[in-house]
Image 1: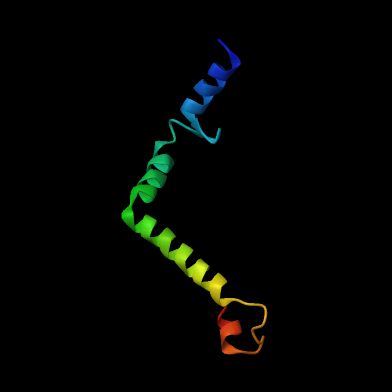
Image 2 (image 1 turned 120 degrees about the vertical axis):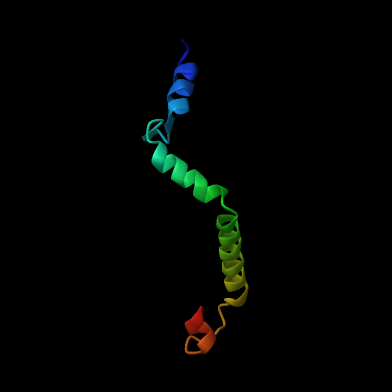
Length: 71
């Protein structure tokens, strides 16, 4: 058996070389979270909030202003 095939066999039965195939509860729980539409919407909202913050944040904002304290 070639070395790449050995690596493939290890990857097929483990996730990140930590969680074995028998650890189904954790892997299934993570899979359910990722496949949920609320998770996708949550990630998109976080990206939008972060992008908006980057647009608003400029070096010339007064450090004592309300905008600076919110950011």
